[in-house]
Image (cartoon, rainbow, N blue to C red; front, side):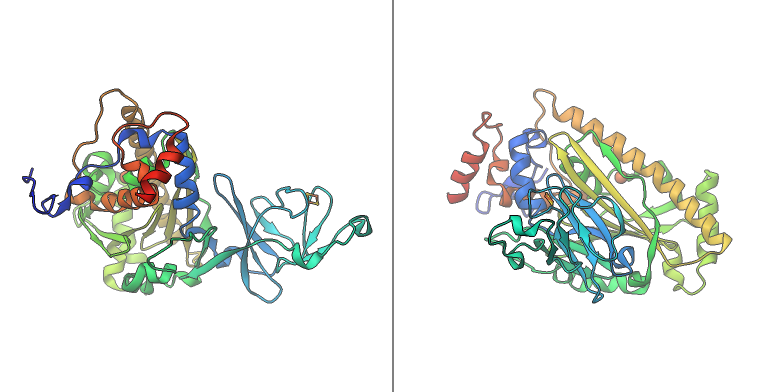
Length: 405
Ligand code: FES
Ligand SMILES: [Fe+2]
């Protein structure tokens, strides 16, 4: 390990406080999770769906977060909007899953009805509400941005927010990597297998932020791909890495068939793209994986201190050819296995983090995206920098004290 440089308090250019990852207690503390949820999850752009999931006026799609539910809906004017999925009367949740409400969003409790642009339209027994001002009781709108066809929402813009404002700014010129795929034209081909992992959401994110574990953790990827371990990263933490299909056939038949078929099926893609798997991550918790045959998003959301939800959506160009269906099936098999491997590894990490006496070890350069992510957590929740777990009931107070310095 590089010696510590006294003048700069850095080790190999890395600030001393960032040589190691977050302390183990931060991966299982309920009070810290509440802070992370408010500041990191609600304060960041979260992927909800694709514009083609809500193609027609009245189509809706619900994104469930730990405490908040957000509904994306296309209005009669063709505009896609996001609202808090909660009735302004007594708070009943309005919609579930995905579907269609062509005329209005009607609350299942007492029947308040909302226009597709959020305005309150009708109230049963309206006269029984003295002085009711319907104009002030529309659904609460949530910030929304469409980026390459994907719908992102930001529930709470933090007061002290600094840095890039939009998803497009966060991606900056890395957007050029997405251009050849015509993502805007894609449609959902699979919901993916959303999973619940017995791990803190940050364990799942950490795992998704590095390729260091591929050679051992994902033997299939190792057999069929030349994986770039270090990758590239922009100033806002968007990180990418390129894996190329190996010339040498894998010993596994599913992988071997994929290797053989992929470069032949997509004749209209540039040669390189037909052999390329491109993996991107966007802070704090989103992945975008671009394959020759399809694209998926991957999002890790907290459910509790040691439980998280892993959301997937798989999209592709409309293509009914048999060979494309086969290719997508093979991809699904390969990446389904990888998802199970990631789950197994992440749950083992969660178990290890609970054991007495574990202190985080150093991070390698290959894990530099973790460093960015952990910095983001420490900046949003300064208490997360403490080595020792605070006493129960004191996390919020301590955090406020540390924030004001
Ligand atoms: S809670 Fe929705 S109408 Fe009463
Ligand atoms: Fe993995």
